[in-house]
Image (cartoon, rainbow, N blue to C red; front, side, top):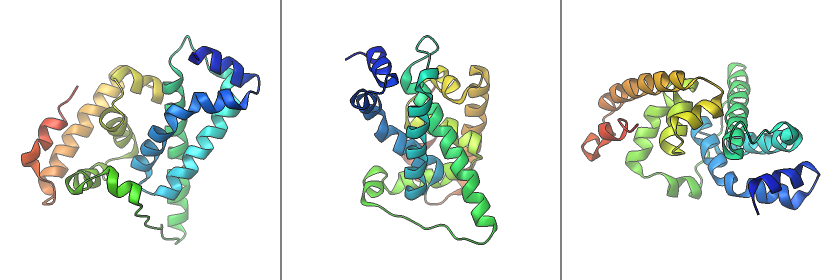
Length: 189
């Protein structure tokens, strides 16, 4: 069934159409949220919140402005940002985050990727978001701009700054094996 038809049916309250519409995007949403938050439980919360927001705001989706995937990714990123802010608030009042190491995560990232990812985690949320969407989710600059609702030039600028900081962090991190093309990876356009 076509996406437009699924959107129309889901807007009218058809739960099966809503599930069919979201189904192909949930795994990537979970990965994106986890990569942004670095906490499996918080990532699950962010994705669930994004699904609820999607359900309640589906009538505002305009297929003429972009793909459903891009629109949903934007909601996921915004929910992850809200969750990140809440996490910071709780950390400030003394609560320590739980460290969740799941079998799923162990299969997603090998040892060198973990080291690289630890460098990614040191970036600001804005820079981390464009890196994750571009390299981990393989979105184009235009899709990232649409997802984050920023100009394409801003996406390019953030990618440039993020790559520059990542190269420095990777050189300083003894666990990153730069001989495996680490620097070349971040030069992808």
